[in-house]
Image 1: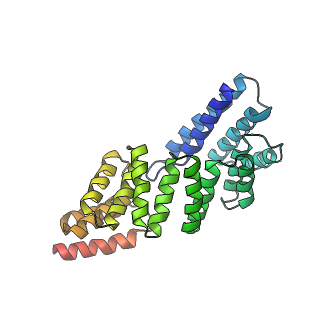
Image 2: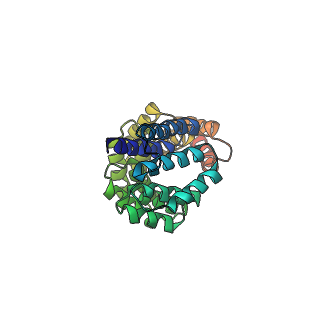
Image 3: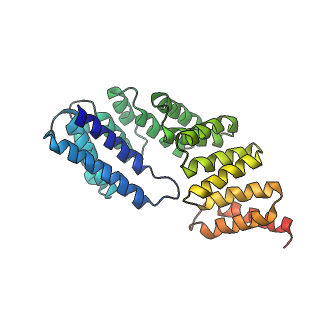
Length: 277
């Protein structure tokens, strides 16, 4: 039981690590995830339960995840399909979620499969919610993300995602508590402070927004959207010099194809015009 519990902890840490934050190098996140999945394999191999019951399933899930991280999706998918066809035991719910990811996160049957094994499986609700977010089905996503949070009240990724959905719907007064709770749970998470600052800006709390955004800059890593949103706050405050500097930094830092480029360029022109020159 101890090894099984420890294996599940490593498994969940690996899944969490693979959900890297904006601005973080995917390679860094993937290396953390890979270490966790390898620990699952080491734990289960030590007790010689590579084939049986829940430990055997955890071992398969770790191997499937490593194949995904290595870009061997077809091999991973084949192993996942083989695992799903096995007798239902605790641990198979992870395989259901992985299979849904192989199908682009949109296969409802795989989520139902996972939830049939563990009805209060937060990851199933979370991944189904983020799949709905990708389709801009904000209200439906909120319902699933809320269920994930009900299962696991300290589920930071679900709080972040639900807050973003509420922000997309313009429900800033409901988004702010989600971001505040995330900041309380993970005070060193820059993206949490960024989204809280963005939400406060939308509510015209400029000083609060700047405090949160400055905190995001302090923690890092800094991405172009941090500069862009802080520039918007400075613009609304009438601090046009700082607004210009932030918009210029956002455009300089932005990767090719950044969807916010047109908005940043327009905001930069406005700030320059108002500054004079």
